[in-house]
Length: 80
Image (tube, rainbow, N blue to C red; front, side, top):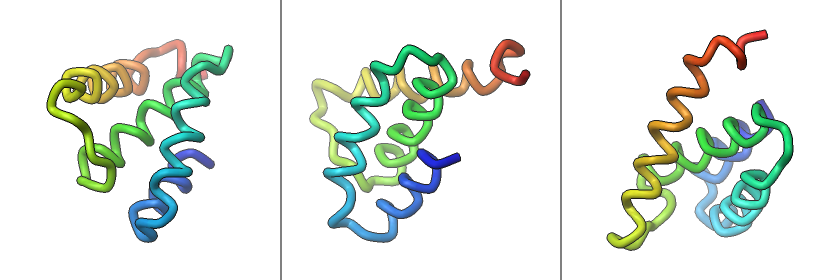
């Protein structure tokens, strides 16, 4: 929930995007799977809405983040 709010806030305030991205990237290293999944969803939201620029060579990673976050959302293990 907090990461979703961070992504929404960054979408409204462009100056927050770099800090939000750095924080969310750090959260990808968290030991808790749900935290990593929420960070992926938030990064995906920023990238797919155009608030985060991605070099063409890294676009495949953003797509992977997007599809990974979808599978985590649909995964029964995350809906406890």
